[in-house]
Amino acid sequence: AQKITQTQPGMFVQEKEAVTLDCTYDTSDPSYGLFWYKQPSSGEMIFLIYQGSYDQQNATEGRYSLNFQKARKSANLVISASQLGDSAMYFCAMREGLNYGGSQGNLIFGKGTKLSVKP
Amino acid sequence: DGGITQSPKYLFRKEGQNVTLSCEQNLNHDAMYWYRQDPGQGLRLIYYSQIVNDFQKGDIAEGYSVSREKKESFPLTVTSAQKNPTAFYLCASSTQPLGQRNSPLHFGNGTRLTVT
Image (cartoon, rainbow over all chains, first blue to last red; front, side, top):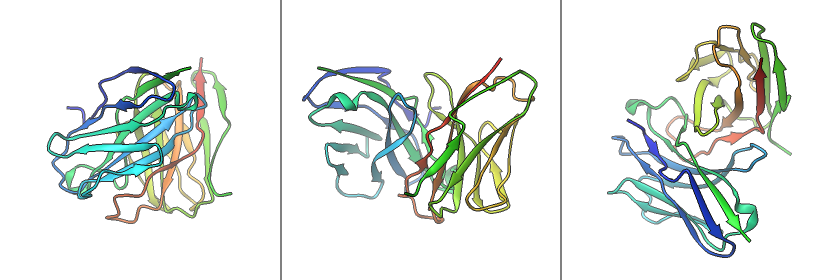
């Protein structure tokens, strides 16, 4: 079974509008971390935002926020006021502990969502 | 500026040849990782190292080898045994002390390897 599922291969959004990128995860580890990365066409992976499983509040970083619904095991990324430069691949990733199959420090990645921002 | 340097950006090799991808970091991170990315796929872990002179296989280690002789360097060799080596390779590092779950991975810019 996939640990990280991103069901939207591609998304379009109008410039200046908000967009939500979906991510669901599967783990039995009570203490896990969730990450979102952006990958522009140049290839580098840019860290955007982190949410810990015990965090009481949803994470926010500038225009990025994470809609964390623990019971549903979902961690959707919300980008507000989209910009043309937001066009990229977006990856959701999870870190589990050693006792739950996690390699030390490794992140498990979803297959990504390609976001295209229209002017 | 601190960061991770991968070289070269593009690499072309003939089938049957071994090739080594370079990864150097000046972030003073203990942990380093190699990932492979194929079109339409997420990243898959090849090898990782938590400390000098020690490394562990990831999910898709067959046909690859690594070394960690220095903290700053974690080169990846793609051997002729790797059946489908053409891919985008990303190196990453992390402070990640054991138990600290919130340390992100910092990535290099990647090497695109084409084997014909």
